[in-house]
Length: 79
Image (cartoon, rainbow, N blue to C red; front, side, top):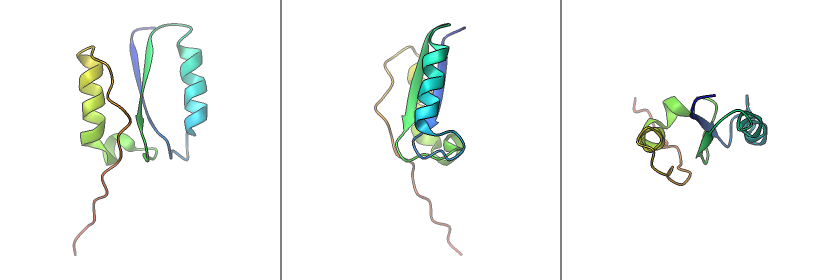
């Protein structure tokens, strides 16, 4: 398994956080896997927390330590 980054929201209703961590543990038997957590992120955290996720991806690609868990940014739509 190549070096892998898992981006996981703690409030993901489709993939519960503890289930994701169990999956990561299984993947680690095959290769290096890192987990970047979005503290209040849901299933599509990549789209709802893009700035937050970008920091984690940048660190992973640059082979730097991942930043601590971040939070999603709430955006209110104006009518």
